Image (tube, rainbow, N blue to C red; front, side):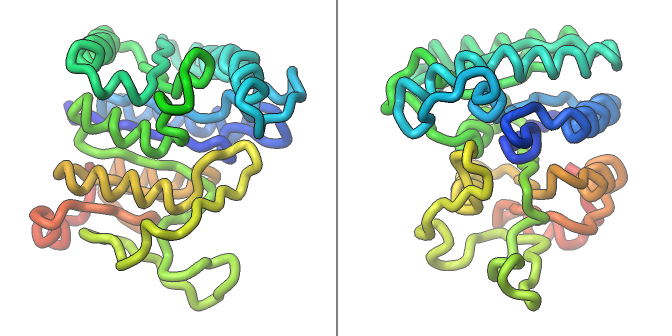
Length: 266
């Protein structure tokens, strides 16, 4: 069975400092479907966004953000647990930092834990450990974390679900003639030099962090699919039926010719 990592952003799973229950349930329902075809690892943002409803501190300050994340992580996980329980899917929480990828022993340990969960039909839910780590130990955004997780667990594909429909040649919110890149095997020149501009005040990413994740994934010989998390139909269509309608597929150069002759699928 092929393995995928799905990363979902803060803007998708929270709204107005609360869990976006309908969107989260739609995601859970999709994952339940995908598990018939794939081993799935979920990387989920949203702890800070959810925690602010319980603890209104200044998230721009390190201690404030850590305290909010500490309050929000159990809210996030309990919400996931209630929804996955509907489908009789057991979940596990895994909190990682950048340091977990710099030590062979620590990397091997979480690899084996995730493999054990998947072997026993448990869905691992990964988030960055904001609480006990220093700024030097953090990726700073879950796009980077998910890319490293996908490589570490030998996933066939990383799927990033955000508030955008994919990667365009210009900002589609400003330009009506913006064109979607459906398949890319390299990034446009200067794409990684732009400033990260997340649309959600509790998010830490933006298109640049997603492109950095894509760059990492492609250099590791893997694929990444960037799609909309508010409307999951394109992701379901691609992953379940191989029908690529919306979303951007990033592929390594050596796979480009083969992919262009293939209708899709992870």
